[in-house]
Image (cartoon, rainbow, N blue to C red; front, side, top):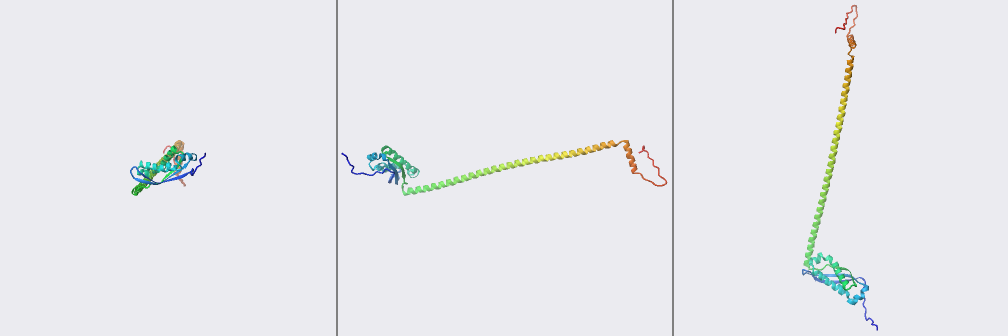
Length: 260
């Protein structure tokens, strides 16, 4: 005997998004807050549809997604402060919920695959929200001031480095200029010494030449001082001073070489 089914229901095995709305919770400090919406992207594996439906009916997502999200959100809030839930740890809440949901499904409902979780910012009391906004504004001002200080310090450091480089460059240029002037001075000294040496050698050569000429003239004159040359010069001197007389009576001229 075959039993025919009396009714049927469709079960989605493609990717779907379950939106869990209005989730109240209390922080560890006792502040009541509320999450407007938590979206869970999930999929039912087609090969495990029968097992999942058999164990948890077609409303399997109520047990392992909707109810579980409420439970895990409250667990998270009760173990953290408002500061952590609203600011410091909020960016980790999506991943935390996805990991917890998948771990539970792997154990009890392996046909459910958690793909992603998206959590909206929780609503907090207006006064606390204003305090947080003021705190964020002050924090932003501090960050801006710190950044401005960092930029100023960086600029100052850059200026110091530029000044150091410029000073080093000037020192190097001065050193090169000093070395150049020193080399030029040494070159001028060497040139002057060479010119002095040339002048000294020229003067010495001229003096030697004059001395040699005078020595040779003295030697030549000494060689001319013979008795015959002296006699010749004596006669030549007398001849230069001789007067010529014309007339009947001529003056007597007596030359005696022995008397001078």
